[in-house]
Length: 261
Ligand code: DAK
Image 1 (cartoon, rainbow, N blue to C red):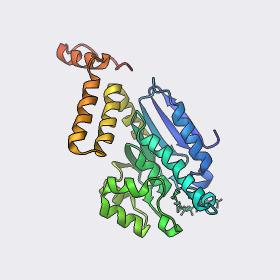
Image 2: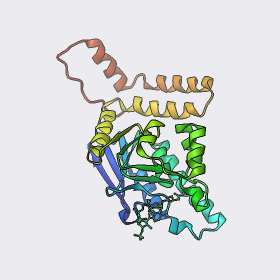
Image 3: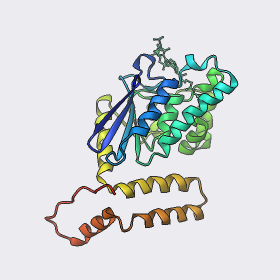
């Protein structure tokens, strides 16, 4: 891999977009390598993923403008599909994905962060959808996910004006869950990841599925989705152990890590 670093740390892993000279801009190769990296994650062991950018300046400064500049309509559509397919894979990835946004998250960078389940950032982060200033629409889900995360009115203002969103505004409108110093960011991201990884893996996966699938359904359908995924947890070793441990009331007993099953 030229542009992706992958580090597995016990039961969580870190994916780093590693194209620092171009502020980690997403060209076709980066997208292909990211896709292949996701396919290779060992889901029997890894229970949470973190995605970040190399260096101190940028998470991802967008799709590669140089590569896009001469695309035909058909090629533009194909490039959009390539990004959309990878980002959808992240959004529907079986385990939670945290975006640790360490600087610019513009265009495709903001869209990559929005395809993750949890977004935290450093205090030098800058968000935005500058696409209309370049003569294009946000193409990797930006017109869809931003409105779902921050509301239609705010999303339209951010997209139509193409103005950058400062970190304090990103936090205020719920585009990120928390802001840390540059030094703290990865420590916090890893703390969240290892905290998630301590919980029952099937239950965590089913929560992600229930939230995602429920949001695209009516409330009646969503509750049926939830019921099925709730039921799916029963008879698993984790459900049996988790409940037996609580009911045991033995204060001296140390809780064992949940097993993957
Ligand atoms: N693409 C390519 N190279 C980029 C880049 C990008 N998005 N962003 C930065 N770079 C490169 C710069 O060209 C420069 O390269 P060299 O000149 O050193 O070779 C290097 O990274 C350092 O950048 P700067 O010298 O510009 O650094 P500064 O600190 O001065 O400025 C900046 C940082 C982030 C403010 C600036 O680089 C900038 O404005 N970058 C562009 C940000 C941007 O507009 N991003 C959105 C890209 S558009 C679609 C599919 C996808 C998309 C849309 C539609 N469909 C198919 C429908 C997605 C679109 C986008 O993401």
